[in-house]
Length: 130
Ligand SMILES: [Zn+2]
Image (cartoon, rainbow, N blue to C red):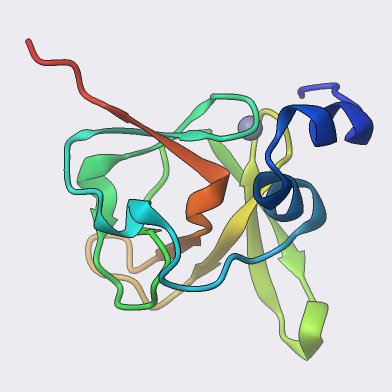
């Protein structure tokens, strides 16, 4: 685990990143430029830089949030979230614990899962040209 305190996180993250990653916030749908990111590469945690998703697992869900059908193995962890009177599965970074979004069982093949991520919690690193 990344052992930074909430104060340290607040200093190193933007206000939007802090709200989502550390306060379980949700960005407004359609606001993330990563919705339109089509290049190959890696989506990393905006908090600690851990690689979380590869571009070839991203799909267009139509929700307005960047969506993936599977994470990089071991990169994320989940907990049950009963906020707002709904039972949802929360997804967070396995390394720093930062809140990323939720996972829903209505995704495409092959996993049938939809990892619905806040774009502000991610940073995209395009694949280097060979
Ligand atoms: Zn992280």
